[in-house]
Length: 189
Ligand code: GRF
Image 1 (cartoon, rainbow, N blue to C red):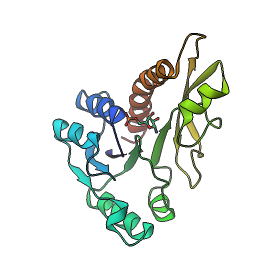
Image 2 (tube, helix red, strand yellow):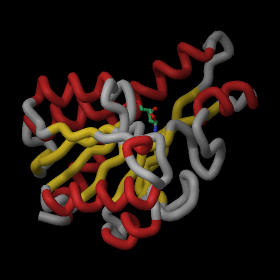
Image 3 (cartoon, rainbow, N blue to C red):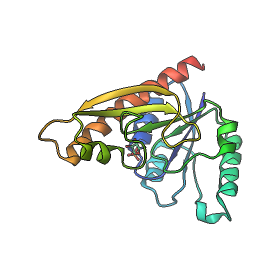
């Protein structure tokens, strides 16, 4: 299965997925890393792994539709079969969704449907929940909606500050995302 990862920033999830593919724990080919920010650190990680890296920005285009059309053309050029969002901070538009039905997955740092949106970890922390977690789901036209594939839970300890909770969440993400992608890749071999 030919996988593309879309990421906007740091890329720690990209790195663990790329490593798992390299070690053949995920039976797939990582054919493309795309970032919508030319200076994103994830692109440096991509170079290190020898993955084809491509980048353009929304502001290079007259509107969001043309940006998405270019992204769709790129995914087609690389014959991508599964799109993996790993810290990609944009809503996926209609045409991309239609081109990849149940073929776009996302990771969200909270137990959806709780705490969707940009600040899942902070929102859960500030709400004072005793438990939060990580959700991996197929993408639909909503914000962090779409059928849930897997969830993992994290306990919020009395003494945890926000940074502690962030570290716990990221640790779980780095374990769960490669596991789930391995399952999807096995089912689509
Ligand atoms: C992760 O917390 C992910 O759940 C969210 O964005 C963050 C990306 O982190 N969607 P990184 O860029 O993979 O380090």
